[in-house]
Amino acid sequence: MTTLSSPELGKALGVDCTKLHFLIMQMVRIMRDGETIKVSKRTGKALTLNDLLDEISVDACRFFFNARADSHLDFDIGLAVRQDSENPVYYVQYAHARICSLIALLASEGFEVPSHNETASELLNSVTEQELIKQISLLPDEVEAAARDYDPSKINKYVIELAARFHKFYNACRIKGEGEALLLARLKLADTTRVVIKNCLDILGVTAPEKM
Image (tube, rainbow, N blue to C red; front, side, top):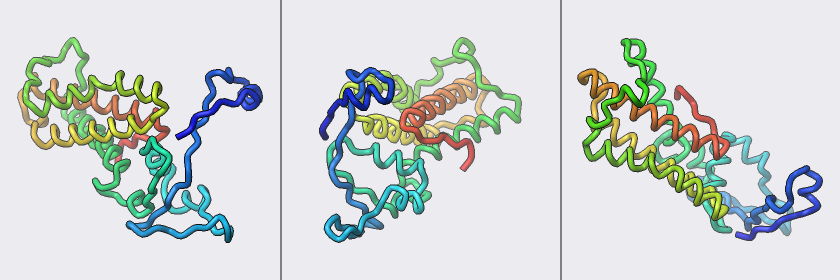
């Protein structure tokens, strides 16, 4: 990866050129289900970004292109269109939608997300709850590191791990049907996870759907 600044372009865009940097990436290898799609600069056979967007969503495109910090990227179109846990952007978006559905369900039963002051956070003492809380707490450091190193892939890795820890928490820790204090504490933890996932996806320019 190479970084460069351009005083001329910075001036044209009306921004401080000392703060405008471009990351130069090498050729991207486009694949479909593990097979390389053949392109050639010599013969003029190429796949443009518009071509790619005919097959995959903007969300998948942005997430996958942000997924690697080095100069070589393997972009698997087959993976990008899958709607299962193997597709990382789908996996993260599904975690967000799952939380939104949970919040809506509990709201219909009279349970609203409590404020921090009203939450018995001391009840969140299981291993899976603590692992999820720890991952949430790492967000400021990850954002700072991503900006310092010109490496947005740190946000990808962070939010994929956050989604994984949420799914683990959701499967291990019952929320609906628990006593009110524990239910509300876990509901608050789920909602906090939702906010963090949405913030990460906003940074990457990816939508955070409420239903999937």
